[in-house]
Length: 204
Image (tube, rainbow, N blue to C red; front, side, top):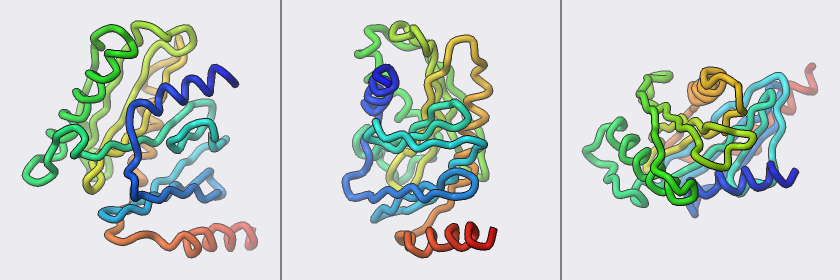
């Protein structure tokens, strides 16, 4: 438990959620529906798996999905100097990745060697990137991220990769989650969303 708590605390250093955003996790028959209500752009994302557990140690939303730890993380574009107007998503995501990896080079005490690629997921540009840990690598030797632009924020999914496991297992899971994003220009009605899943359970 201590190792998991420390890991989540470390990952939380990467991003900060918007101060005015409201976050909710609604239990569903497939896992959870994560909802972020934001003044600029709200969204939902589906957390699916055979076994899904909501983690409570992290300041940011985190879930263990079929044994893989996934954290949902956010960065305001103004925090890393990317004006949202006039820049394509690929450029914003590239600036964000450099900002994050420059920051992480401090805790890791080394310049990180990052592998990065862009992919279109459900019509949305996403940056898939990863790096090998130069330290703190006793259990997890790499980290992977999938990031997308949502309104004036970058939303990211991050996972530490267990030694000897393949990167593709993690990136496949993260891209599958990103593919379920649904956007809204106004906040979602949480009671209405939750009632739909309650009704399904009662029918079943």
